[in-house]
Amino acid sequence: MTPIIEFKDYTFKYRSQVEPTLRHVNLTIYAGEKVLIVGPSGSGKSTLAHCINGLVPFSFSGESTGSLTVSGKDPAKEGIFGMSKVVGTVLQDTDGQFIGLTVAEDIAFALENDCVPQEEMFPKVDEVAETVDVSFLLDHAPTELSGGQKQRVSMAGVMIDDVDILLFDEPLANLDPATGKRAIDLIDKISRSTGKTVLIIEHRLEDALYRDVDRIIVVGEGEIVADMKPDDLLCTDVLEKEGIREPLYITALKHAGCTIKPESRPQHIETMDLAPYQEKVRGWFQKAQLPPERQKTEPILEVEDLSFSYVPGKKVLQDINFRIEKGEMVSIVGKNGAGKSTLSNLICGFINPDQGKILLEGSDISSLSIKERGEVIGLVMQNPNQMISKPMIFDEVALGLAVRGVSEDEIKERVYETLKICGLYPFRNWPVSALSFGQKKRVTIASILVMNPRVLILDEPTAGQDFRHYTEIMEFLKDINERLGITIIMITHDMHLMLEYTDRAIVIADGSLIADDTPARVLTDEKIAERAYLKKTSLYELAVKCGIADASGFVERFIHYEREERANG
Image 1: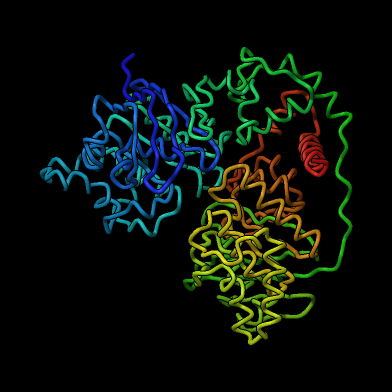
Image 2: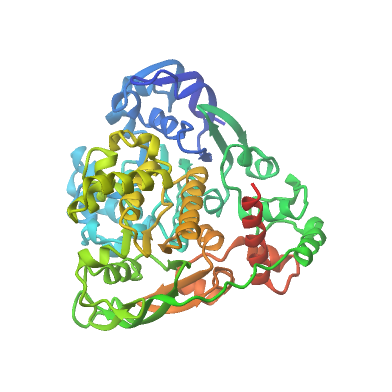
């Protein structure tokens, strides 16, 4: 096998940092391999990718020692343009990658740069568009597309240059579960049909393993902590130690007291040999407790016969009915473009329904302005940068109160109290720009919490977060839900979040409400999962393969067990 990427005792330190981000990295990747790179935020995995595609040292300057060759070239000498002929990178934020006004123009961009004649360009664009299944979108504007479609167009744009290496930076971050599966399937197809070397950097390990990979490289604190075949790695405690979420079925097997062996092929639950573990899993299921029934309280938010369309005659939401009780934590799920964000915009008053009404504590809120609704219903957007308007943390959190004419003394008292709740008090005099993405997210939550809302709506609260930061944010939300009694509604693609932290899931597909049930029942129902582009949990497969008839009961017991474990520290 021919090495295509070789790091030899490679160390890299960003110009502004005291400590190196990568330390003594020795890593060889061979031509045609498909490799998954995982690691918590700040571990150095993105820096590793930037070294391979030439962004280090050209966009991110610093000092390096040791050597690195990619396809026989030194990225530090070739530059970004030189490396773009060897490495095609598909970014996490696909919007940052579009240049053309139509999909066809965007795919053809690299060919136009190389002055390829049009008679050669057209068939090439058609061929690549067919490979990634976007032929029917060639005359569309990239901005009109769904998350999954945008990603396919980005893939086509880098594949047209006939690069040796395809690098995918968190391809699943903004996709619903079913679209994520399709993306992983497509990457696998490209890998097998073209023989290109494929590198995938991803937080969502279980979803990334939907198709085989040759190796998993675990990066921790700038070093290669493990470089193993998936079947071997899943039998160790490396992932747990590094703060990376294991596949759920692996965690469940460990809870049942099983010692997993590589020969059982644990990479996929569908093909894993579970015979040696069935008895222990069944024994655990019989002993495990079901969660106690949630006590009913009075409704805080009711949606009655709600319908809405942006364009007359094309309903985005139709006849939506549900009620949410005081103090609940509820998830709203469904595929990209199902109408989930439209629903939150209707509740907040940014748009008005065509018919139906929204009640808050029994009163119709149609007469309340956006500002008045904002005092009782807070919305936290997915991207904190879209919400922050002040340079300093204190001023950002104080803004809502200042606009409403609250006295300076009261503002100070309420802001300090809220910053303490959010774990941001030590940073009260810091600029927002000095914070991490997760901390900025907390600032946006604090700026809403300071208003004492009764309902908090969060759009994708954990998108792009590693397991540790995800857990921090979710535990924090659970804490304010329990301590302050705030009702929390989360719009999410994360099936684990929905299972682990909410007791109810409202499922929307094609503008209609198709289920309102416990997350465990939703994620063990094939028809609902398929219609809403959700992904049946691997715990369901585990229960079925171990001969447990009550699969949703198994999932509920697992989640209750996990919650108890966390509560007991």
